[in-house]
Length: 110
Length: 416
Image (cartoon, rainbow over all chains, first blue to last red; front, side):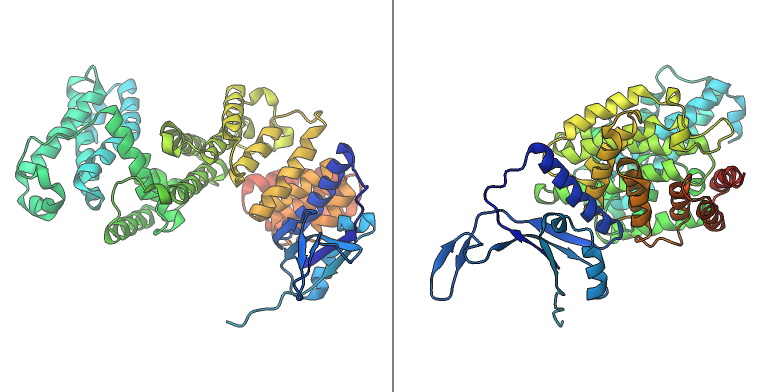
C-alpha cells in the first residue's frame, strides 16, 4: 500500500486548468501501474473528518495535530517492498512536495 | 441435398438465409413448449422442416410467403410427434401438462412469442455453468442458426469437436434443469452482464478471428449485433451497459470493410482509407453511446469511448489525450495485455515517445509479438538499431501469415 501525504494548505484553490492537469498526472501514473497488471485499488480522501481518541476526545478534521494529512492511497500487487517502491517513482504527490509511504500489507494466515 | 439441383440461383440463396433467420426462432418457440431439455427434439423438427422445404420448393417452386409456410410445416411436424410417438409422450408428459390430452396444441409463432422465447433462450444458453467457449458455440448453433460446418470453420476446429462440445453443453444444461425463463429481477443484472460478455466474445471471434473467411467473420459480427439489438428491444434489458456494448459494436463494425484490402490482407488502422469507413454505423454508435451515458461506467462504456475517438481525425487535439485517459480507466477496471499495449501507444501520442518507451519497458510482455511491434514503432525515427531489433523479434513471435507480412514490410523499410 502506498499512502500519500502532503502539507495541508486551506488557502490553495487550484484553477480548473490546474485541477485538470493534476487529474491527468494522477491518472497517467495510476494507468502506468495498471498497465503492468499490478493495480488493485485506489481512493482519494476528502478534507472532512473527525478523530476519536481513547479518552473520548473528538477533534474535527483528520489533521488536528499533524501538519501533514493523508490525501489518499493506492494498493498494488508487488513481489516485495522494493518492487512497490519502484512503482512509487513518478507519483504526482512528489511534484508538490508531498511524500509516499510504501508499506507491506500483512498476509492473513488462512 | 440433391433436390437443390432443381432450384434457381435465387432460391439456392434463399434457403440458407431462411434457415439462418428462422431456425433459431422456431427452435426457441418449440423449446418454450417442450422444455429446454428437449432441445435436440426441437432442432430435429426444425431440420426436418427445412428438408421438406428444400424438397417441395425444388419441385413446386417457392411459395408466396416462405416464412409462414415453414411455420405451418413446423407446427404440423410437432403435432405429428404428439400423435405418433408414445415414448415421446411418456418421456416429456410431465412437462407438457395441458397439452397432453389435446393434440390440437397451439405452437405460438407470433412475433411477440418468438422474440420472448428467443430472449429467454439467450439467457438459457449464456449460462455461466457451462464454459464461455461452450456458451459461444451453443449461441451460434441455437440462436444464430449456424451449421456445424460454419462453427468449426470459425473456431478453426473440426466438426467432431464442435459436436461433442455442443452435446456436453446441452447435457449440462439438462442436468442442471436450466429452462427457458427470464431471470428474476434480483439476478437480472448479473446474468445480463454474462450475456453481454458472451456477445462481446462472439463479436471478437468474428472481428479478430484468424479464419480467412471474410463473409463468415462478418456474419459473426452481424449476429452479435442482432443479439444485442434483441436485448435493447426489451425494456428490462435495455440498460446503459447494453447500449454501451451496442455503441462499441457499431464503431468497430464501421471499420470492417476498411480493415482488409481486396486480397483479404489486413490493413492497419493508421493506413486505412477513411472513405471506406461506414459513417452510418458511426452515427448509430454515437446514438447508442449517448443513450448509455448514465449509471455506472462499465468496460463497454470505456471501450466504446475509445472506439468513438478512433473515428475522429488525428488533427483533433483531444483525440489521443481522451483515448489515453479512457485506457487508464479501463485498465483499472480490467487488465489485459492488449489494453496495456494500446494504452502505451496512446501515451506516446498524447505525451511523448520517450515517456512511452520508459513505460513499455516496465510492462513485461516480452513474449507478445505486439509488444515488440509497438516498441519498434516507438523507436522509429529515434533509434534505428533498436527498431530493427524489435521488428525481428516480432517476426519470430508472430503467429499469422498476414501479420508477419506487414511486419516484414516494416523491417524492409527500416533496414533501408
